[in-house]
Image 1 (spheres, rainbow, N blue to C red):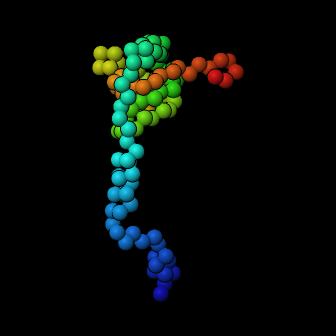
Image 2 (cartoon, rainbow, N blue to C red):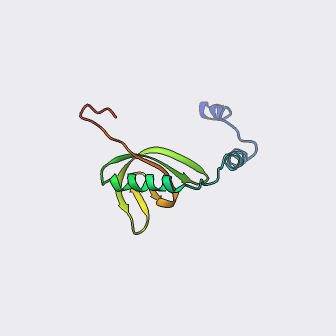
Image 3 (tube, helix red, strand yellow):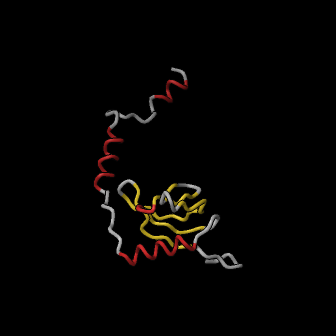
Length: 112
């Protein structure tokens, strides 16, 4: 038996094709959450934070995506008020999906 054929016998084997994907799908269904209903004050905070942002700013954003809440730091590309969406370098986030927005302020020393 040559070296390549011998090595193949030690490769991982998936006896039940698709089992891992199905288990991951079922786990994601169990961890899904419903979209929270925001109070008027929370909506006002988000509106105020959006109004203070401009192109090139960085903000810490929490938003609803596919049954979960995602929180990350994003660089703002544009804010499209007419289509109610926030465009970042990594994602397009609709205003209805926003849960929290906080601009990240940096001073001259680079600390927050």
